[in-house]
Length: 470
Image 1 (tube, helix red, strand yellow):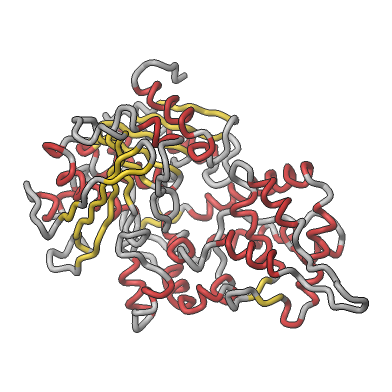
Image 2 (cartoon, rainbow, N blue to C red; image 1 turned 45 degrees about the horizontal axis):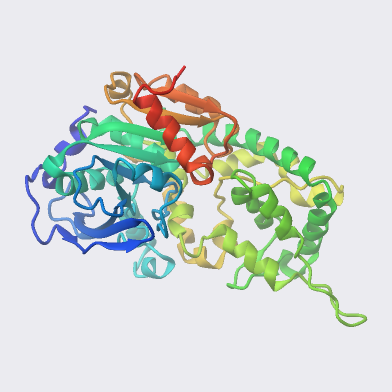
């Protein structure tokens, strides 16, 4: 696919000016030390069809207070996910504060998230069939996120000038799609924990095989830090396994089972402070027995905390589309579920609990049984299976274009990243001409959130020649 093919099939992106229906801009307002302005853009659901239904895409402009009228270069932030909205600034802090020193920042709610025609558990219930839902969801991957970004750039940025993009995690995947199909819209690219595998077909099997190995490593590190949690988690798994129905009811109406408990690793094992938060969560598993002979039970506090960690009820797109982000012309076939079978002797929670050895948690993986055990996902069980079988996903990357890339790119690659495997990231980096790499073990996948000012400053310094990049 040629570098301009994505734009060529988007007739709306060829328009030279916007009109009242295409963009609605609000007034400037403030939070401490920042000024913000909300923009809503009416874009096609399907850019290949001029008569396609329209959806709204929301983008929030952010500048340092007092710089609203200054002609600063634009920087677009692409959030991790898939299926999560952009951050909501409450003050000037972290990477946003640093970026606003020299940039006009744009926080994009990727289509289907936040205020961009949000696809929530309730809104998705409007579809009459799973087939209709799948035909709608197929338009919510990185290719169309890039089309939305180009639509916005040509209407928001003065003279439709190229902008810099900062892609975190899945946002980095989208940024590499951007480099593949719309590089003329880019001044420079910053990637933080977000270099995707770019092979043809479905790379999910390769990704999960590598991820399972890193997840094992993270589990071993966790239990070295908190060995006292080994019997605690084993006791909990045995309790769940012996409960009627093989689990305990969750506040939302789903069920917590031993294998469901394991997904706490998604948030607990791979981000800064995750080990500590997971440990403190296990301190509150049990209700006190207030009277002699009282029944032992899991506390509401723990069950509610568990649901707050998984977030499927508020961001169902993550579960529905997660494996499809690795697909180009092939189906995922529930890749994580298949690969787990190769590691079942390690990840079997019931066996581990009975042997009183560490119960290993899983990582960034979606399994088919989640659509049975989590109440918010149950209505989408059939759609999830159809998405796992779908094999006509369009391309997300163009290796030839990446090999001849002319856009300056700087990337933070985290050596022990549990979500984006280091070795796979380095393979892709070797295909992006001119990329500058900052390889570090000082940060986890959440480096931009945990130490945003430092990470942003390092990458910008590399692009500007102020810091070495080899």
